[in-house]
Structures are given as C-alpha cells and as structure tokens.
Amino acid sequence: MAQRIAVIDYGAGNLRSVAKGLETAACDAATATNVHVTAAPEDVAAADRIVLPGVGAFGHCAAALKSVPGMTEALTHAVLEKDRPFLGICVGMQLLADRGLERGAHAGLGWISGEVAHLEPRDRALKIPHMGWSPILHTDAGRAHPLVGALHDGGEAYFVHSYAFAAARPDHVLATCDYGGDVTAIIGRDNILGTQFHPEKSQAYGLRFLRAFLDWTL
Image (tube, rainbow, N blue to C red):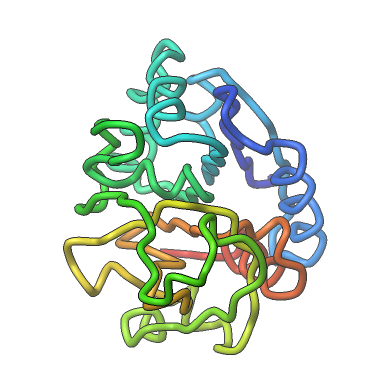
C-alpha cells in the first residue's frame, strides 16, 4: 500500500509547489507515495507523514493553523503520540518554536524549544530579508542524524526570510547557513524536522532532502 503524505492546507502555505516537489521526489522514493493537500484533521490523523508549509508572518500563520477546527489536536496526536514523521517548511518550521517575535509575541506549537527572532547580520550591508541561495552546513548533530547525515555538505538551498529560529538546545540545530553569522537552516528532534529554506525550490539539494524525508524510518 502506498504511504500517505498529508500537506496541510491552512491558508498560509505555498501548497502547489510543495506538493509538486514531493511528487517529484516520490518518483525516486523507495516506497510508493500519495501526496494529498488537505485541510481535514482526519486526513492528518491518518497520514503516514505530515508536511506543514508556511509563508508570511509568524503570528498570521499561527492563528490560521489554530483556526482550523481540530487541526492542532490532530497534529499533536499524529506527531507527538503516534510518532509520524513531520516536516515543517519555512514558517511551518518556525511554528515549532515556543514563540515568534514578529509584530509582537505569538505562541508557537512548542515542539522544539526556542524562539523566532529578527535576523541581525553582523554585516549591516547584508539586506533583510535574506533572499536567495546559501550553502547548507551540517552541524555535528546533523551529521549524526539518520536523514540529514545521509546528505552531503556543500549543497545549496533557497531562502526567503527575515526571522530565524534560535533553538534553546544546540543539538536541535542540524544545519546552518552563513548570513552575517550562523543562521539555523534545519532543526530537528526525534520524528520532527524543519527547514528554514524551501526544499521545493532548492533544486538538487532540496530534491535529495525531500526524497530522504519520504524514505526516512525511525
């Protein structure tokens, strides 16, 4: 039976591109895969893997997700209780934090301790938002991770963001990029992963990442 991938539609994600990227990666995945864009909590609860995209301001995305009846409960049950592999993308990754500080303080899911704060590059000539291609640098924790460690340093990924995840625990940071200092690029713990970059727009590295996510076993 094909594995079921739920891409959550809560009105705050680049769903078409994410779904297409997953479908492309699924062509080379070890297991047959069906990608389903859905706003139904019951689909999320039944999914084998879950993807949460996000584009826009932290507070808007947090409010939009919580406004879908039953969705946060379905997510919590599937990810934290049933240990289904989870991937947050861009603001979907930021929502894993305890809180985001964009236009005020807003509560996140609190699955990975930390906060999302404004980018402050040491080089004031660097523009905000950080937009474009940056090399991905795996940390020691990332190299030890079964998914991230299977990828190679030196890949480039596409970023568009003005805020970044400051994790409370260094071992939850699996990769960084350099933008006037280390910026969190991948976070993770247990069955939970998040990317600040857009894997669906990151060509070779992004496709390898999505394929690895589809094949990831805990």
